[in-house]
Image 1 (cartoon, one colour):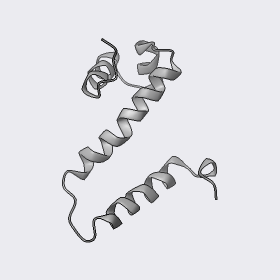
Image 2 (cartoon, helix red, strand yellow):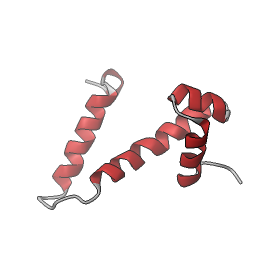
Image 3 (cartoon, helix red, strand yellow):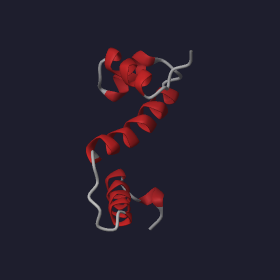
Image 4 (cartoon, helix red, strand yellow):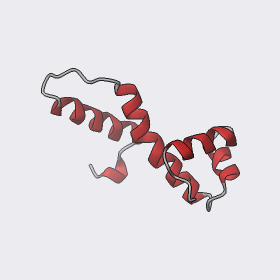
Length: 81
């Protein structure tokens, strides 16, 4: 099955399973924060691009407050200037 035919959940499941397998039995640390960072950054970058750089529209699409979006954009260094 091609990537285009798989759900985001399926792709995430496969990626996590692969990541955990590469640890060779070592226990991961702070996995929750790692996963959120890996998912949020491209999510915000792509939605902001889709919204033509309009933060208010991007926040609405994401279903979050514009201030929260802005804080995340700063944290992930996704803002120009």
